[in-house]
View (tube, rainbow, N blue to C red):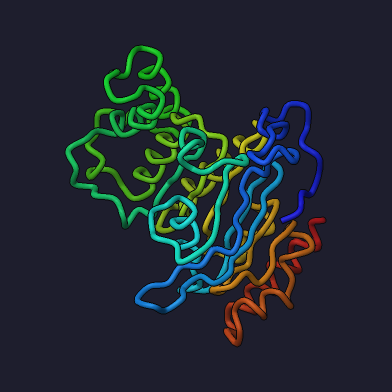
Length: 278
């Protein structure tokens, strides 16, 4: 994915970092030749992606296209058959504190006996090491992050007692507490109400404006032109990636979704709406 523009002076310092080879500024995310197979069946094949500037990036494709698998493979949560992934020019093991992850809600044990506040506080653990307990700065940050997503009044509520939208807000607050520079979010809008969806994307825009990068697995084609700077169209292989204005086109969507006429009609409407707004 080529940069749409040059990072501003206010952007975070990663733009000036040098990669491990010393050849120049490191990409925020560099994925090369990533392949993942389940029981010898490829679900992601020869995937390449480079993100070079702070941006909101939508990961879009049909069900079973490998979107969540791509995210998990980048983060080492599923094994790779091949490929290399670097973050700010270095392997994940050296950059883990700078990379945040919000999983799908279905993958979380909501019966775990922990409150919303304690869940958010977990986002600070990476900076503390094995033997330090969160102190006043971390606890204040957790409270601020809960407030930022409108969940302060639920701080003492067990997470399983929250609604789906409230649970998603708590996990977003946990990611905020980590203070990462790059976030992966796996369908953060799935099953949430309209108010929570607006909160989520207002938050994502603010992260982008602060110089951070957010990659979002997303399923609603109608909102892609409004929500994202860049888009990655994926169907086992990379179909196309780049700025929404030049990549989210009827032809690329046809290549990604095949003959799904219902989805293509939705996508055509979204493309037309995006063109009118530009």
